[in-house]
Amino acid sequence: MDPKYNPPKFWPTGPSVAAPKPIRGTRITILGCGTSAGVPLLACKCAVCNSTDTRNQRTRASVVIQTGDKVVLIDTSPDLRTQALREQIHWVDFVLFTHPHADHIHGVDDLRNFNYLMARSIPCYGNTWSLDTLKNRFDYIFKETQTGGGKPMLTLNPIKKRIKIKGIAVQPLELIHGRLPVLGFRINDIAYITDCSYIPDRTFRYLKGLNVLVLDCLRPAPHTTHLNVESALVLAKKIGAKKTYFTHMGHEIEYKKFARSLPRNMYPAYDGLVVTV
Image (tube, rainbow, N blue to C red):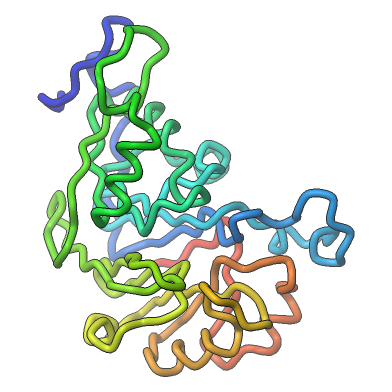
């Protein structure tokens, strides 16, 4: 058992599930590819929100990446529990946070379910802004409270440069979200970039030779803090990944219509999409 894990007496002292079986290569699963409001929007009567195509139903943006027997979660969306049940995810070795907006961190309390299943604490990584926000907004997690009910057992760690975490090389990618400094991540030949309006020149050196790029693409019209369709296509062509999947899409984007409009080797993502390289 993880020595940092000190559960209440009614929690298990050993894992109640087995660690995932190792896989060859690297696999990314799109847990959610929607905006902060999700799709469908509440009370919206548009064609996309009323579509029967499940690929137009988008929970809040997040992915899980497995390489070997290690499982990496990027962001804890408010839909994390539903996403984990849908994709049968029961193990998380560590979490990477892109930034601390509500649609990317407000499922953090659901990590306690993974603590319970794995009987260990979970290391979490992000920039200073993300870590400080987590400590302030979810202060009960990081201070002594009454016994009972359970709470996540997390260790927060800053990430500023390429590091190895549990044997996995993680390259943080500096991005700009409006005026805010956020992170994307590269693991092996997969890069994940969401909530982004600008990629600094210094970041492009870490985006060479990608097999898979998952890239922000909010809507057709320009936006102050996100890539729109036009700017996302320009960046996708510049980066030149073998395959690019667009994420963080709003209800202005209809899956089939958007897919038909895209260049070769570029696709809209959808919840539950699995890509292995």
